[in-house]
Length: 227
Image (cartoon, rainbow, N blue to C red; front, top):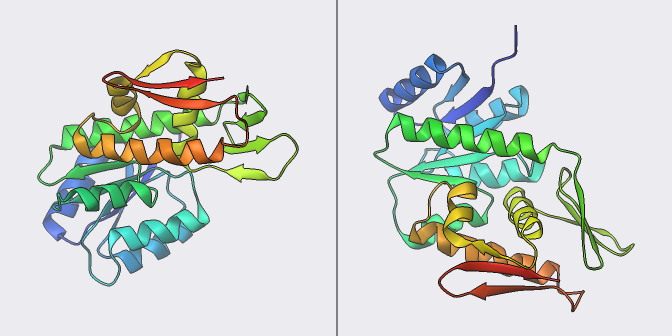
């Protein structure tokens, strides 16, 4: 019998937490429900789940703080934030500190399940053995490591690695903005687009030692990696 995928759910609203837990369990997931961020972090360290679903506003330790602590130990585990907050800066902050997706309350369970499955599928893709070359750089996709010639390794985040993977796979061609937003962020709304711009800027800085490499913005269409 195959092992169930374990999801850690941190939600301080008891009723909502139980609804999400039961819904996910009917889809074949094992769910560890935690009522606050402190309990969630201890559970994460003990159980090592495959994915985290974190409410942003929680007592004792909020979801953003919890995510930062998790990212110190694991830069690849998928994280989905649940929140009633809708300000642009909150959404951007969530992605910047290492979140992979952001779902605003109220939401449908079907949407949450689709996003969970998308992230889990992406994680499986990451475990492929593909090593790519771009200019003077070597990109180890499974390990999320970028190396310039024989210099020290540059560790990428989960989202940086997947974005660079798709840019390299579409080298010298336009990477459609809407397609990549839906593939990596789960939607192509304004907040996700702002977040992607931040990650593109980070990748440009990490690739700036090779003058032959450029990531250009093709207005109205997307991005193009030129080498």
